Image (cartoon, rainbow, N blue to C red; front, side):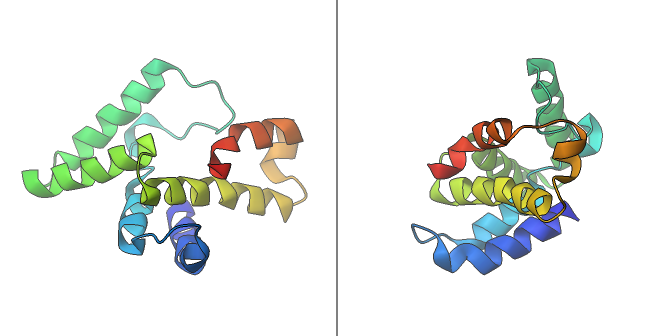
Length: 133
C-alpha cells in the first residue's frame, strides 16, 4: 500500500519538482525502496537504526533480487542503492516523496501513529530535513 501511495504521489508531483526528473526511474525506485523489509522487517522511522539492521535490510534486498536473472537483479539493486544513497536528482525526489507522504498522512489523521508514539514536531522535522535539499 505504501509503495503504491508514494508512486502515485510522485507521478502527481513530478511536474512540480525543482529540477526535471525521470519519472520512470523514480517510479522504479519507489516500487523497490522497501523491498528489504520483506526479510528484515519494517522499522518505525523514528526508531534508532543499528548498523546490523541496515546490513540485514541490504542482505535481504540482495537475496531477493538475487532470485532474478543476474542482469535484471543487478539493475534493480543499482536502483535500490541509488535511492538509499540519494545521490541523483531522481533519488532525492523519490526520498522526498517517501518522507512527505507520512507527514501528509499524520496531518490528516490527527497525528496518527506519531501522536500514539509521542513523536514531537521537532522530531518529525529533524528526521525529514534532507527533503529540503
